[in-house]
Length: 110
Image (cartoon, rainbow, N blue to C red):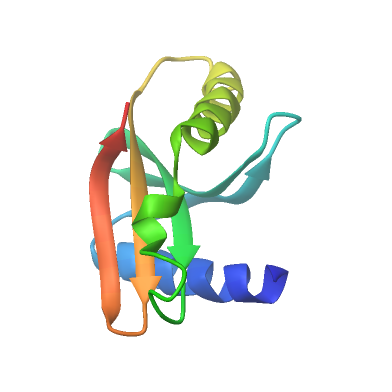
């Protein structure tokens, strides 16, 4: 399972870098959870959740980032932001990857 997640994260990271974002962290972990990618787009810190599926047999990958997952990501992001020493603008994005393409939702939740 971890290999599949890493595969999707690699695809997402390359995709975002081609769009001009810079990587800050990968697989940032705290007691609250993990953030797959932390990127920077100009002055904005972007927390990215990546979901990869071979097909939509078990649903669209974007639909799997529910309220509980969002809360864990936000709690983890607060710890990361607290370590910076300043309060940047930030956003939460979700990338869903299916064999038919990459779907990037900017500002997927707040």
